[in-house]
Structures are given as C-alpha cells and as structure tokens.
Length: 189
Length: 333
Image 1 (cartoon, rainbow over the protein chains, first blue to last red):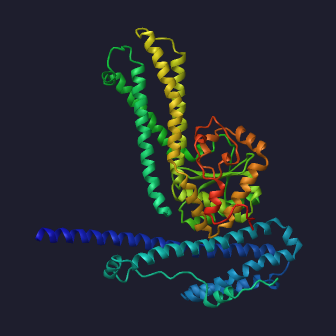
Image 2: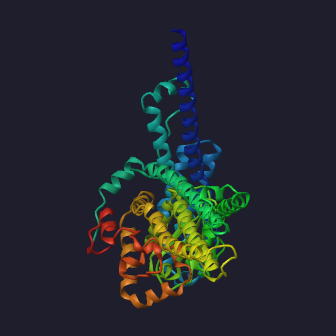
Image 3: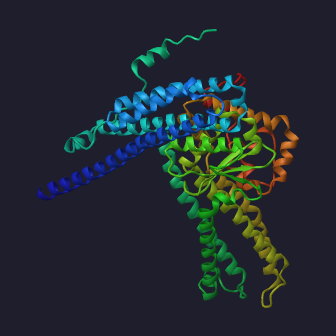
C-alpha cells in the first residue's frame, strides 16, 4: 500500500514540475513578445525623427501632422516615466492613426515625393508600422497559448498552487469606440 | 493538423533520412570492400571481417558523416550554388532590396523566429523563391530578381511569409538534407562507376567476376536515382499546403499569396521558352527544385535529367488556390 502511495506521489510531483516548467516557458515567450512591442515603438520614433529632419528642408514641420506626432510621443514618454501604461498605449495608438496620413502629406509636395531619402523613410515607416502590428499579433498569439493553458484542466490545479506567478496576459486590442467606428464604416463612393 | 504537429513529423523524418543515409553508405562501403578483395572464393561476410574491409567501411561511414555535417553547416549556402546570388543586408542601397529586408524582418517578428535568415537575390531569368538551411541560425532565404520586380509589397510579403513558414516548420531541414544527400550519393556512385569502368583488370581476379561487378555497378547506378527519388517523395506535398496555411496565419491575408502564386504562374506560362532556357542555364537547379515555392513543372517546364522531377513534389496551383479559399479564374483584387 505504502509503495503505491509513494509511486503516486512521485508521479504527481513529477507532473507538477513538468507543468510548472512548461508554464514558465510559455510565460517568458509572451513576456519576450511584449518587450518586442516596446522595441518597435522606440524604433518607430527614431524613423519619424529622421523623417521630420528630412521634411524640414522643404517646409516647417509645424504646419504638418508631424507636429501632432511629436506632442503625442512626448505624452507617451511622460506616461512611461509615470508608469502609466494606459496613457502610453493611447498615445502610441494615436500615432498609429496619424501614420497613414503621412502618405497624403508627402503626395501633396512634389519635391518631397521626388526625394529618395523621403521615399526610403516612407518605406521604413510602413515597415516599422507593420513590425509593430506583427509583434502585437505575435504577443497576442503567445498570450493566447499561455492563457488557454492556465485555464485547462488539470493544469489549472497546478496554477492554483502557484497562484501569483501565473496570471493571464491582457490582449492588445482596439478600444471599444474604435471597433464601433470600424463596424459602422461605410465606403463613400 | 497544425504546424506544431508538422514540426514533430519533420523531426521524425530527419532522423529517418539520416539513418537510411548512413545505412546506404555502410552498404556502399561493404560493396567497395568486396570489390577490392582479390579472392573471389571467399563468401562475402568473411570478406567483410578482414582488417582491410573494416577500414574501407569505416572510411565510408566517416565520409558520410562529413557529408551530413556539410549539409548541416553549409546546406543553406550550398543551395545557392551557381546562381551568383547577392546578399541583402540592412544597409542595402537599392530601395527594392531594402524593402525585401524589411519584409523578411517583419515576417520574422510575426513568426517569432529568433534569428534573421540570410537573404539573397538571385539574378536569374525566372520568378521563384526558396528557403533552405538546417537551422534558423544558418537559414537562407532567396528570391529571384524578376520576382522582386513583379510583385507588389503585399504579394512579396505573402511569398516571404510562405518561406518563413518553411523555416518555422523545419521543412527546410528535411529538404536541405534530402537534396544535399541525394546529389552527393549519385556523385559517389558515379565516381565508383567510372573507376571500375576505366581501371585495368587486377591480377588474381577472374575476368568474368569483374564483368559481373561492372553489371552490378551499372544496376546500382540506375537504381540509386530512383531510390533518391523515393527519398524525395518522402518529403510530402503536404508541406506546401502547410506553408501556405502558415503564410495566411502570419499575414492574416489569403489574397496576397493567391495573387502572388497566380503572377508567378503567369510568368512561367507566358514566356515559357525563355523561362525554360533560364532554368536550363542556371547550374545546380536540382538542389533547389524541391524547395521552390512554385515548381516549374506546373507550367510544363521539364528537365528529365533531374530525378526530383520524376515525381510530383508540389501540389497543383488549382488545389493550392482552393485551399487558400480562392476560386481559380476569379480575379485577384
């Protein structure tokens, strides 16, 4: 009888160790992906700064949407310093909304359109914006894997043992009114 | 079936291919050992136990190990052989090349890969792309110049996502192994074949026996390409569907790949003669034919010297488009 109990307890300890380690792997993957988002946000700011300096030869940036970008970025930086994640996300998302408009701005100035540096920077901006959304996508995917795992039976029992360490990750998503706006969108012809 | 399942399947296949390769080389070594034994009266297993035979078999196994190591470390670079491919880096001046680099980096982030593959542009006359290499670290991703010129950003992104999916699923590992090992094996047999053909009969060996050996070697010379073709068949056609699916999962867009595949197909059918010539003029096509996103066979371009092409390695375009949820004939937007 004792041998059976010992066997079962050894097996269950091994199972708990196995689950714990796989949860740690999944969690770290998700954390890594979330760091990637921050890296891309910084990169985007650098590219935008170069665009601003390239554009300033042709016009005062005060006249353009780039002015809004700069003020939004400083808002985001303030939010990071204050540890305010919600405001930071809001400011960065607002920049994302401005970026499609940059193309229109460049199109309006023939000098700008012909400038190879600006063409290169526009490609950089498109690419960085893509990288940003792909890293959000990747973060959401790895969060989904982790979140689904910790809710599954019997993994959730193991999670109960280490409650504080394994908390579900929040997904990156559009804000509610944003979604509403996109759902109600009607193409005007 | 998801890509994680494909990953385990590919790991199993890698082990199987390696094992069968070592066994083949063991047999080849044993065969050569018997070939060089002057006394034909001995039965074959006693010949194998002599010190000389043991050395020969050992050397063959060592050579096979070196070939495998070459495939592991240089497999990606080897698949570019003969194309004069140009490496694309972050600081490329050419805008199109820079865009290619950016797209690969985007897809790398989407797939959660840790290393950037080495990116190459092949200056050849046909539209195609492939990925190869043993590991993420030494993976190679190459597109041809006409492909780069003809596709728009969205389509190029789809093609790159398809190739990145191959790397992520470790299809590249299986394909690199198969193509490198199969070509080297055929080369080895050729060397043995020629050395027997042109060597003078040795003293002490009966003439009829050496005549028999030549026949045996010729039979092997014919059988071996068929055997390697079976190895190629073992790399299933499912991998293309799965990479297509992986592409859609990464880009969240099925129309990009559909229109890219259609453009590549049109590029092959519209200038069939030029394209065929371009394929023929590029050396070492057989190393890449398995890995290409689009098999030139699908537009009727054939090369019977290439054993890989004896069997269908890629699914038909129509089936791929259907799997992407796009009807053939429907215009891509």
